[in-house]
Length: 317
Length: 317
Image (cartoon, rainbow over all chains, first blue to last red; front, side):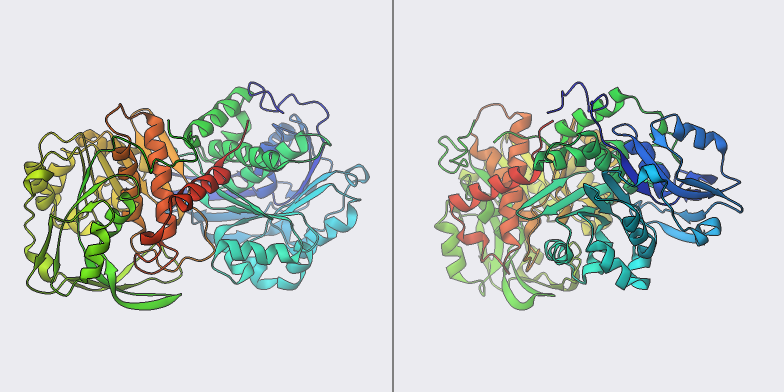
């Protein structure tokens, strides 16, 4: 397995990871400050997080107002931006706030802008990407991406309450075609129509996926698969500025770690270690607004945080 | 350390553990059923949980309506009931309900009855008990117990929002005299006047205690001490009938494990393993109403659940 001094960052034979999702401007107020129109979006956070561990292929759309500097930053970090469309119009804009309970985002305004007509078409070279992450977009678009990829090795999906309520048919269809669902605690309950998380996860697994990864905000992650459960805490932090992007950073680290392993069999411990990489990277995201902290990590930062997670959870019987 | 096949249950040289707290009748409604006037109370759950690991000395009061059968059960299990007063009048009665969010208890009625005039006097032989747990009662009574014990080795305390709001002076005074505070997540925030748990724990440690053990219901336990943090999940269960007594069962398993170790130095791993014993025993309590499941465990039940906790949390880097 991986050398503890080398958190997979220089692993040879890493496989590529395709992500489709939003890129956005976020305007956010939290008890710790306020920012206007900073760079955000699920695909942005996911790509940056995953890029520490595997090459990423990005599929998204922005308007002409999106900073070229950020696109150059992505391209400089093993993130292929050929699938990023720059459309006439304005970039998707989310405005919201958090109170002290940082687990709950309150939406003030959602301006879809160029995202409204997003019809993803994969560049030819993207179609054989072995690892695929379908970020939180319309289930019909997630299905469209799956029609365009050829025989992926592993597909994971995220979704949200809006699609659960407004597009249940296509959502159920696309869930039937993926291996892993990565989803918030409240949303898995709503989707399955079942409060108990074990039974909710079993309901979803009955539709097709073999693993359900439940995101619980500051309480960490609960991971359910046939015959096994894994619970990982979030890292307790003294300063949390902005939880926006934490879930997408987690998913990016999780999928990036798996893609970075190459083409061997994925073991249960690989899934667990992927969970810890995702948690470690997400714990940096929340320490600053926007992608400021996430985009400037070193391999040592990540491996130190992974060591802190071990110290946080270990006990000897 | 302990043999994994022997979860400390036959450990020689175990020390005694004094608990003061309520014994009660509970009337509870949850989405999974309803019970009327079943046996409950913090000292009841604590004693039963701890009795698997160490001899217990019980200090509490009940009315003449309390079932003798339950007192005989306690006495049959290394729980000394000399400090249990049977007073003229009716036993303390709590009536409440839970909705699907089992982390929040809603109180409908509290009838203090004989508990109203509770003035604990320790039997002489209790006064040298080395381990002491001050259950959730009036801080003035917790202080009174501390005046009666002689040089205890380790003292832990629980409290609740009622005392935080109505008796802040004595509460602050008694916290200054204990080693460990075992407290709910919402209550540590209220007590410290600080939302962030790391800072809240540091505030409390500034008053005297060296460890703060934060109970987070279905999310487990977060343990803070100088220079170290420990996070343990709760065990995900498919059937949770009644969370009443889970926190007290946790505290009983936690303190029982430490007392059961005897008189050697307590290491960081001892505190962690104590946390896992507490969590394992509490995970049984919630699987049935009242003490039904808690009172009928075998050593194998506890050691199997401890093994399940290891499987739930372990990962190899």
